[in-house]
Image 1 (cartoon, one colour):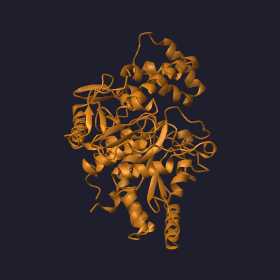
Image 2 (cartoon, helix red, strand yellow):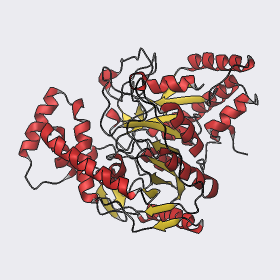
Image 3 (cartoon, rainbow, N blue to C red):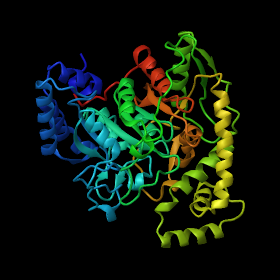
Image 4 (cartoon, rainbow, N blue to C red):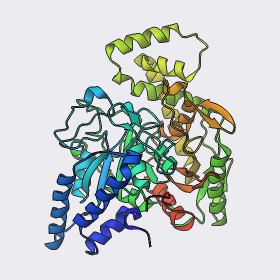
Length: 484
């Protein structure tokens, strides 16, 4: 039988509802695990144990009175540091925001609390949520439970590490550059990047910011595909302002089983070569689906040039994050962009130009993005999902020297820029598409690999459903050793 702390959030909620364990007992179980295992991981960086104990007592009292409860009633939960939680700072790892104490909860936090969770802490992030590692000068470095010498991913690295080690029952992250998908892949858990715009991001921002950022989304993370479905059901839907005019109804999956499912398979790309160990696991998933009578093709693709897509994504990504620049940094980037050679097409050059991109140029790039979006829509008229890697490699050693764009990872015996693998984030993300990451096995070295399941816009339930089928028939969550 699965240990309590490695059960899904749905199973934990059922145990509380059936009174096999009280919400208070369940909370104390997870708090004890945090005390025991978190020092070596540094995944959870803020706790409110007393506030959580009050919430747990209230949950038990409500159950005793026979009061209707939410889908996650009594489930201990942590949440990514970038979400506002009353009484806790929201820093995004930036020292200047060390004392930015939230006075109201993020909308997603309110929705989770209404669903019955017992929120007890926050999980670690990189500075400005801008790395596939998780470290910052306020809270330090988060380690991967599979091997503490390795990164847990980012920017939701603390979230994924806490889930994998059984330190929390449920988590939620944000994703503009695979920040949900990449940590789920590195740590062997589940993560869902929703269709752009369906989960309101209010309260997941630096102090004073309210506008929604292009490409960026928030979404659920868990130890099962069912938890993603529950989490999305809690988070999705318009906020109060938009809800006055419309509601959200995501379509059901077209097929209930793998038989007949039409699956396109992509193992690597010229813009981001993928390590053979990762390719082998994606191919294993494709082969399994074919044995279950899915129609599988390694040739089917949307009519989108991948090199052009990578260019569009980097430009729009860095334009989207350019508002973080101070006036001084903006001026320096203007000077740096002006000094670039006209033929310089490096990631640094693309990033620097995008940081100071004139709005007229942005409009042209955005137009290209929407043409790609229409091409994807045509593709999904015939195909149900496209499966592909989440990143170029499995988790890699900590490397905090210099700037991100100067670091490398080893792919098939060669050192390549870490930023190349942003391709696997942007291929679907820049055109608003949903994608789910589910466990797909292990490398020869025993590190987890996740498969990315991309679906049509608003096809979130299809992506998660395919992950559920793979969970029940191929592989589900496997806990790392040493966290019994």
